[in-house]
Length: 221
Image (tube, rainbow, N blue to C red; front, side, top):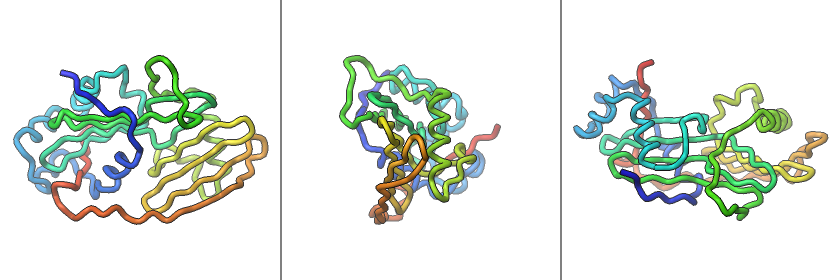
């Protein structure tokens, strides 16, 4: 059974899930910390690979686990949510991709985020899923090395969301973390940063309710 999905959503949905995952639990300890329904327990017992494939099948899109840098399985005890993320996204000129996705297995609900460069750009065919190539990786590395206080060698552990849009002479970058949104441009030739800006983000108003807090499940290898 495939589900109807909302394809154009903001990344804030996924960031909200990430920021409300207060702890990371092993499969065995989750039961002690979260009161889970029988349905949730049965799904978790299937293991991460099977759960991820269930989410992919429900979305019904031509996506693979390899399209995403980070996949998490989360639960609030009543739902199992699978989060597919690419924390750093590089968009060449005149391109559009599906970049992030999320699926609630029990609720049979899902969403896919599309990003375009320039914003609003589209194509008359199904959007491809984001798949970095070697040029993409080199350009991301160049951008990270040009940013002050950015650990360029630690791409795999990048915890915020970064969108890099290529332009003819510069890269247009936006970064969203838990409390700060930043934006700037970086010249392609020199790596010089300019048009730098920052904005403080107020914490989202979410009451500390167990039903609203999703916790990541860490499966045994």
